[in-house]
Image (cartoon, rainbow, N blue to C red; front, side, top):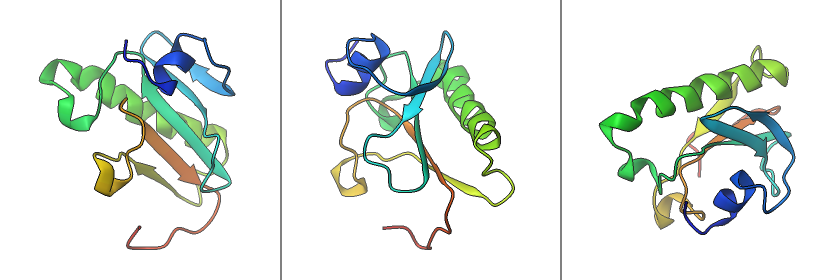
Length: 114
């Protein structure tokens, strides 16, 4: 596992407000939220970013999205809408080298983002 904050949260070396966990992914509230609902869904497998994902990772990639949709329903933002974001690289705002999906909702989102 990589040496970053998400790897340490997955290993439970750093506390987090976990809202979902199974054998493949963990989801927890972002410590610097950009929306009323801002949950990070991360694979337990060490995948540095979406560009490093392999064909063999497709099951966990799909699971990240279905868990995010489940959490959107759980948080009551499914009906009004939400945004899923995966950043890759510094120009996109990626700051932790561990693949993660941002689930953002609870307010109107502008377009285009950024």
